Amino acid sequence: MKLILFSIPFLLLAGTASAQPGYPGGPPYYGSYTNTATAEQGALNGMANLTSARGSYNLQTSQAAVYATQAQSNEIANHQQYADTYFQMRETRDAYVAKKNPRPTEEQLVYLARSSAPKPLSTDQMNAVSGEVQWPTLLQYPSFESERDALSTLLEKKATHGGLGYQDVNTFIQTADEMNAKLKSGIKKVPPQQYVQASTFLKSLLYATCQVDLQ
Image 1: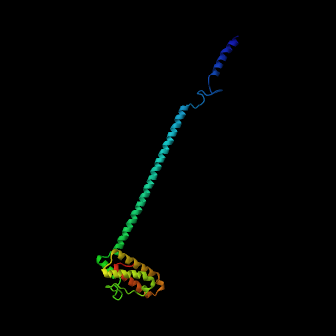
Image 2: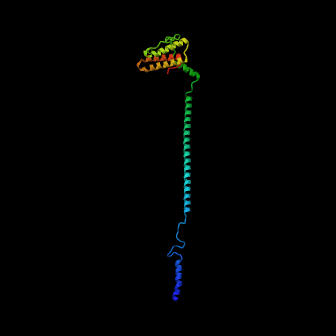
Image 3: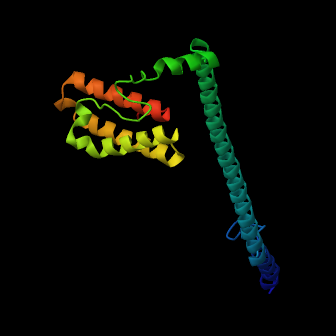
């Protein structure tokens, strides 16, 4: 009986000891690690990460726009600098040319105009009173007949009335240019001396009548 009574406290103590947490035969005293984050905390963390990502994207986009604008500004500046350099070089060249070859004075221009004017026709070539013309050999060919008749009619009109009107002057110039073009078209088929004689005559005739040169 004493043995039984003595054994009961021992068993109670053993049971109590086995019921208390401890390292041997059970989990640690503080328990195992578990993730205590709630669903709401996870959602908040996700929203924070998303907001941070959007902020980074906006910042990078803004920086890219700034870089693009700066690159465009640099390109425009380069083009402007190129244009300025080009015009400066051209002004320098023009100034050099103007200094090397100065513009003729009014007196010089008048002299050049007179010296370059065709030689006046002699009285044997054209009668200023009647307007009759003695055409050179080449211009007497049948291919020039229509132009000869037109010019002769206008020359007689000028001799009669003392001048030609605006329309008649234009007609005379156009007809003389057509005759000259036709003359040039056969330059390889006629004697050079006759060609020069006809061309010189036609230039002098046009200048004496209309004060203009052949085209």
